[in-house]
Length: 197
Image 1 (spheres, rainbow, N blue to C red):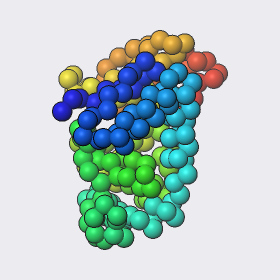
Image 2: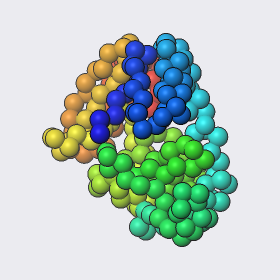
Image 3: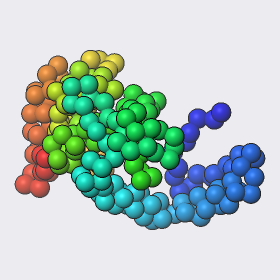
């Protein structure tokens, strides 16, 4: 099996032979859809809009969240064979749990935050213990954009993008120090237009 590739405007889609005509049609649609950068941006914008259409009522209709264990459970039986009461989602290759709702995949920790606090998180969600599968509410917090965990150094890394370049803010042991450095660097780069939410 080939590794998945990122689709860019110049990427050619290869249709596996086992798909037959259906696969060929699907591949042709993909090639047409991403023939230029503008069509690719439209596709990703529509994906973002689909995520914005998810309501708290819909999530609560489908999922139950246990804040102690961080586990999500289906309230209703699903078409994919999942029974009511079974664990929702599956682990992805990067360690995060993903849950598919109405054809759109969501990160489980963002859904957990949404259910528990009744509002979509305003920024990136950080796992305090750095275990991406641990979605207990005490392990989740909203972190400042531009701060990420560098597992190779066991430090928090600060980097801010401005004017098409990535500006490095350093590495920190404490996340509070990293967030302060990110705010300072963002203010330095963007001035009065800096957004710290």
